[in-house]
Length: 141
Image (tube, rainbow, N blue to C red; front, side, top):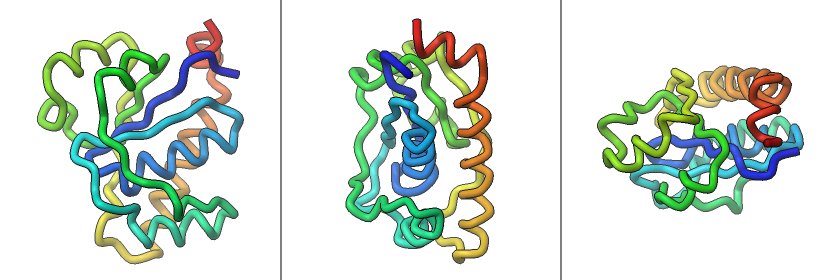
């Protein structure tokens, strides 16, 4: 579907952006994820919540957001973190042309029931993204 990937960004790349990347790939999208201050590991509760959907992200590792990831992405989706505080200004400047902000609650420290709600919201947003005519045009151009 996509020539360049959709890049999902959050602070730690341990929860929201990992779930978004996994759902995007499930929907046939070329996707990556990264964080501005990556965690040492994926949130185990997020791993459990995704496993319930038949998606195994247990071997994923948090990755740092780089200018190269931004440059190569056709679209950057932030997960609700304050991008102005978390990202250096040159990286933000690269994002502006292709930035979508999703205001999602952080699953960090939350029980499985709450993480499921966040997971379901992310899944819905990714599904909408994968069927958006405007986004499909951007990704295939």
